[in-house]
Image 1 (cartoon, rainbow, N blue to C red):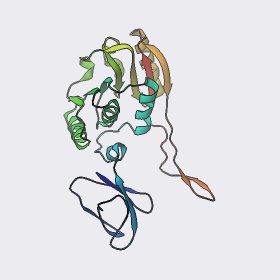
Image 2: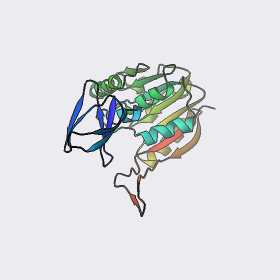
Image 3: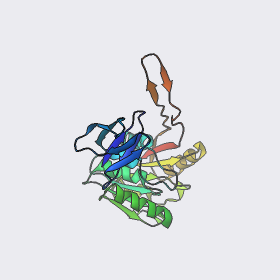
Length: 238
């Protein structure tokens, strides 16, 4: 897929089959070679190959999604290896499962649980759009139990992560469970629950992202800065 970037930095994803885009600056046709691409009115756009994050940010949204800033923190703080086995629940729109599936690569596997059929449908469509073949979606309530074993990572984006019964037994030694919760009280409750399962509480963080416009004479914070989205709680099977 191709990505077009306008003079103000706004990005446009051109999906397969699209050969031109109609803009306020005129018609921009996909060029044979990437680089500077002019509209028929002479406005310069940049054309390049879309990467995975370009595509992910254009996926469908139903429920709130786990943003790349938080997904990346999960990968870093768990030292998630390529080829890892992962369970993600609940899927929601499938963004986190997709990110993890892309990261662990074709030798890895992500199984994602989603009990709601409408959310599962959105996630499935997003996985197809991203052409991911190493992610399996289960339209099942994860509080009934995780079937997979010897997992490197379990991620839980649920209202009640403490209702998942067999987390410790599903993880391999050294594996992590990471919960994504909006309130600190929920984080504390999960830590107490995890300790009863014999898991080691390693850390709880929130990731704040601020983007800046860089100019020769000034620095300006963009209005699109991303503040608090949720707390990430990391517990480890030791």
